Image 1 (spheres, one colour):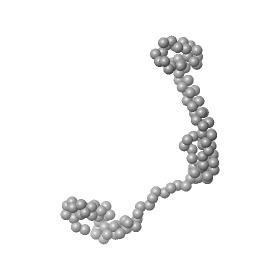
Image 2 (spheres, one colour):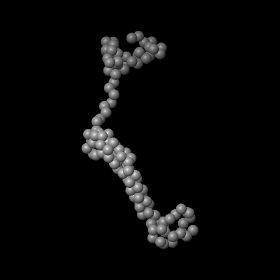
Image 3 (cartoon, helix red, strand yellow):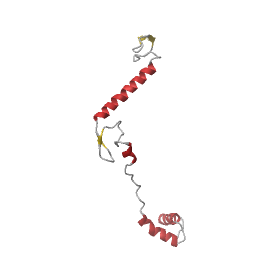
Length: 123
């Protein structure tokens, strides 16, 4: 099927009904379409207002993932610390293990073996 390129106006042969550009213009047409799509998305985000997670200022995000109004707020955001281990529960177990001359892991494995009935274990 012979079609005319919408970009340069030359005739070209194609098997596709959807083709709009000749093979030499296709990469440039793809870049232009991608650029237009990015601009359109930016315009959509410009209509949306988001609240900064650090300072609470309302701002226009540049993309869907922006949650901070500036680099300063992103760098100075409050850091969350991982939850502390339950030390209060581990201290008595660790003390008993040390009194028996074992490590915490060895004590726990022997305790598990005793509870499940695997092997002959005495604590």
